[in-house]
Image (cartoon, rainbow, N blue to C red):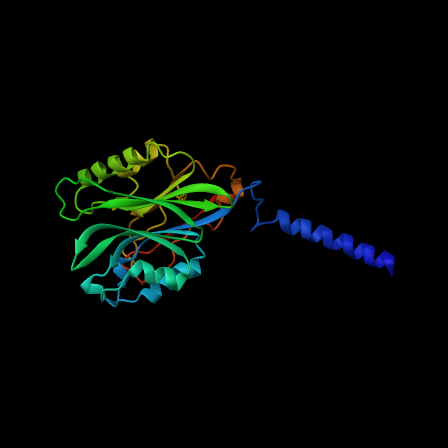
Length: 271
């Protein structure tokens, strides 16, 4: 009886050790946390069916299991969306912490970008861009969060959709504002430009890696028939220690949803 129990305990220990080493088919870098990150232009919660439904947006976020979400086109107290504080409502529906940055006044309320986080938000920085000739004011929000005792900076932005030189001008302002940010940094957003554009090259030249590593894939717009990739997750200072298996992992995805006119992009990163 004791011998059988001992053998059983040994077998259990071996199985548990194997499970601990086996994380989705690959070994986790020692001391690292797997983060799931989303960038999502929510079109103020209006889907391809022209109906406003924040519950659908919240469902997409919940199902993704993401830890950090950068949102663009978010209303707060705007007439067209019933004066709802959209980011506050999405935070309630998802159970996440939040931060909002308003880039322009619209219909008696505010319109801008926002962040949802499963980790505590410790600090918030908001900058509006000077622009060239587009009427819509743009900007970015940066939050500092604490993940397992370590600090991480997370940014989301929304760039000029009309003019390539306007996007380039805004990106230079973004990178200038971030030049003194130390440590791991993730930048998400609707850049309104495909990977072959100058903005993309500028981000890469500034040391940012593209979280979507499969070339030619990841189209996010329009949601019903995605034809181009204009939504991104860039990062620097994290993600090191990936094994070849990680690059083949299903950590990159574009959820099939019509809750907005964009599809979200989801990327898994080691932190």
